[in-house]
Image 1: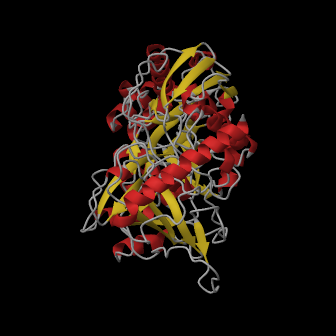
Image 2: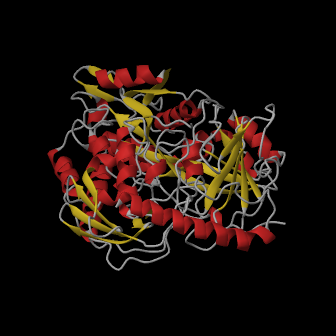
Amino acid sequence: MRNTRNCTRLWRFSVLALVLCLLLGPLANADDLAADLGGDYEAAGQTDDIASDLGGGLQGTEPSNDVASDLGGDLLATEPSSDIATDLGGGFQATDPTVQQQGPQLPQVNMTDADLSIGYVEPGYLTYSPVATDIWSMISVNNLVFESVVDLDENLKPVPMLANNWVQDGRNWLFNLRSGIQFHNGYELTAYDVVRSYQTLMQAGEENPYYERLQVIENMDASPTDIYGLTVTAKNTSLLTLYAMVFPVMQYDTLYDDLPRGTGPYWYIQANAEGTVRLEANPLWWKQQPEIRSVLLKRYYTVGDAIEGIRKHEIDMLSTKSPKASLSRKLSGLTSIDYPTLTYEMLVPNLSDGMLTADASVRQAIMYAIDRSVIASNGYLDMAVQCEVPLPPSSWLYESQSAIYYYSPERALQLMHNLGWYDLTGDGTLNKHVGVMVQEPTLSIITYNESSNNIRENAANLIADYLRTVGFNVTVTIYSKERTRQLMKDGEFDLALVGVNLSEVPSLSPLLKSRGSLNMNHYSSDDMDQLLERVDAASDETMLRKIYSDIQMTLVNRLPIMGLLFRTGTVLSGRSIGGLGGVRVYDTFNGFEFLKKVN
């Protein structure tokens, strides 16, 4: 049976190759055509059909070409070699100009000019395969190369991509794949490819960026009677299972190649020793062909060099999360699109008995006392978006009513007066009589810096200044990230300004559940735990929205964490980038295939 399938595939592919040669040969030169159409190119794309039943109330819409990865779950997000395999199996070629080539030569590939050039930053070892890479820049590049069963739209809501539709029955899901979609080597997409991709990513272990989200899946099988039928058994009945289906699907025979084959609008053509990579439009793609026919990826070793490269017009486009891009966004001749990252900045209060910050009214006073818009613009260099809850404002699960803390020093003072704190000495600092003693509301803010900037330290000092204005006695101390983490674990702090890397899977359990992996102040609430457990059981969209609304409103009223903002990144370009849309941190070139070619 397997041999018959392979023979059929080879016959089909031979006919396809002949047709493409007849159609494309007279129209393209050797620089624009893949050297070998028979099995080695990648691309990433999306879907265009609308699912009739997406299960649980989620309605399918025209998805974007983004495929999310999952790099969430640690204290503080920071922005994220040159060895390339000499033979990636077919079309993707690594070249060494010092080696004299013998025998028949492949068509010469243009590695200096293309319709559009993109810069990327990677100072270390470089690998391209989704199975092996955890490099942020390569994950976004691979979203021009690979597609997933489910995609996320501009509201981070699951929508169909390689799946035409799906239905849910408790913990069991049936995904119906689209027919006729071909990998870059000409083989047709089947459910077996999806299952083997899932298994390989799981086997890659925790270092793989998709590993964490895949943990919600208990089992995945291809239907024995329908090559497009995919059955998934989840560990619970939650609609969040759909987020686990956002992973790159690779042709199963190529999973262990240096570069597996994908299904989308672009495929890899060649890379050289300097890390320059050429992509070209995939003539097998199942959607409308991109107008940008060729792309060069140019490697830089530092963000500063990459930003200088776009200023000097060495490249047309650059995506970066670095604050160094803050000024470049305002330069004439450059356009930019900002996108929220998953780095969430927050103040973590010490909730231990006897601590000043254990009182919810004090925490509310702190939130009213600080102007988060100024902190975002001055402290975080205008590369941040205010948000009091750990869900991006663009998310379909975000509760807009959670934005309750506006800048009001008067409201902050009133809350402190209600607790018995007044300026008894006329020096601007609040006091309270405790027995025969006069006490001050003293706060120590601890934080840490990133390796390349002092942004968090600057933000902590701004926060301290605002709190001093309403009568708090505040000090700021800068530690290493490790020392900050240890002090928080030991309870030796008042307030900690930290950033956490969240996941595109909108689970808030790591932050808010008792003993959650990101619960750094030992917050524990039976009510909150019950809400979070209800998320795992919610199989209805309306129910899920209601639960998330309750979680967010409980959070901003009780303030076990004091949310400030999400950090943002930016796509810089020296040309129009109006086609980009729904850009996400792990898919920063979403909509790239809709860009217009500039002559």
